[in-house]
Amino acid sequence: MEPQREWKKVSLFPQRFIDDLRLQANILTIVQEYVPLKKAGSVYKGLCPFHAEKTPSFQVNPDKGFFYCFGCQAGGDVFKFLELHEKVPFPDAVRLLAQKFGVALPELVDGDNADARRDAALRESLLKAHEIAAAYFREQLMNPVGARARQQLKDRGISPRAIEQLGLGFAPHSRDGLKSRLLSQGFAQSLLVQGGLLRQRDGGEIVDLFRNRLIVPICRDTGSVIAFGGRQMDADQGGPKYLNSPETAIYSKSRTLYGLNLSKQDIRKVGFAVLVEGYFDFAQVFQSGAAPAVASCGTALTPQQAQLLRRFTSKVVISYDPDAAGQGAAARSCDLLVTEGFDVNVVVLDKGEDPDTFIRKRGSEEYRARLRGSKPYLEYLLDQAAAGIDFGQDEGRRRFLGQMLTVAARIPEAAVRDQFADRIAHKARITEEVVRAGIRKAAVQRQTAVTAREMPSLGQMKQAETALIWGLVHDSSNAMIALGELEPEDLEGLAGRDIFHVARDLHEEAAELLPSTLLQRLSTVNAQLVTRIAASATAPAPPHACAQAIKRLRWERERAAIQREIDRLQELGATQHEHEIDHLWQRKKDLLHRIERLT
Ligand SMILES: [Zn+2]
Image (tube, rainbow, N blue to C red; front, side, top):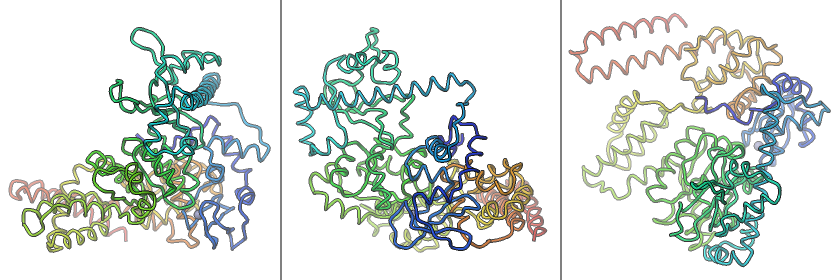
């Protein structure tokens, strides 16, 4: 599986068309339509359109075809600029660019044109049906039939203005209210079942999916309604407390962040997003104006949601219900965000409170104060584990240490891990050496169980990788030669491996086109990384030396793995495993020779 392959880039346009368009579309011309730029050496600088700033940290490199901001780290090619600035998905950015340059759009590809057109038509109809359904639910809420629902919203402290902004509605008891509305507008019944607005009962009868529920419309970040969430009016009415639309041609739960359409502009402005759990947490935070929020809706965040969020910020404050379930989802979301390279803080509310109840009781000022007092994730984990432990007792200290060692073993970077070890030692009043040794041991045990593919971030990237990536943009032909010297095994485990693999596939590309083609083929996260590295003005190291260093790193990794295996066998009993250990020593020696010959 390739979780990083970007779904947004799956467009119906042929690659050749996109390549040609990119060549015609000078990024400088396009960016200058939006941002005043001044020449500074080989690049152009200006005030970043994606975050508020007074001194320019945004730059465009017209030769290499990319932009980058040192302030907020937004970066990419000309398509990415339009995606971010116009807040549209990739295919729309292509259309927009084609329009600007008066280029005719090609026939849609994708194997079968008729199929592609049918799919597009289906999605179009479903969007229209959802728009009508949303209007229907809003109308019902305001009708006499919606009186109880209005009262419930009032009891929940949701203001009439927020109801309107969130587009909240009500699905009455009626089995076919929405059905008749949509059929009367000419929609086919089968389409509405397929689109999750109607459902077929066991007896064959087709009825409204949402009945006797408060309705929350779920939107794309562009604002179109693509699904609904429905909350029970009565605890005994049957069905789940929250009923959601099923996955359809227009709705994928794992790729949607509730509330992003309402918050995205403010997220850019303030530079972070608050992540809450449910619709009503979102509603409270939203109407309080304390900070821009999004909701993951009950489950832990997915990588796709994290990537969606990254278009707007790389800093997240998690504000989940601090009960046990909340911790589980919160912990998984935090882990994911950390590996995705986000800055993660955690808000601590009082026991039994979620943002919804907290803001209703204590007000938005108090919530704002809690946001300001939010803690970095690791710090938060420490405090949490330390709560309720009696550090005066050996037993308590041991328990605390045991819990923290599993956390510490997950930290990928050794320096951060050691820092964390010192914090643990301080807290538990145990000497640092003991803790560090414990972490090393836990890390060795974990080694066999490491499965999660780590997402790349600059922090995880080796210097040689960074330098080679810089070379791909600024010294393309030499970098491609150097990349050709590397074997696939050399790239394994590198934070930049996806970038290198995509680059290797471009070996037939003319050197001057390589930077922009590369950027266009990469996922958002990786394209951003590349522009971040390429924005640096000076060459870190020549490509050939980088390739050598990367090879060396691979052998070092292999050597370390062998060492770990030796350590493990020795711990199990050196005498029983003497033969294996000897063999491993020999392999280690071979590797050392090879490493020496490199330099
Ligand atoms: Zn910026």
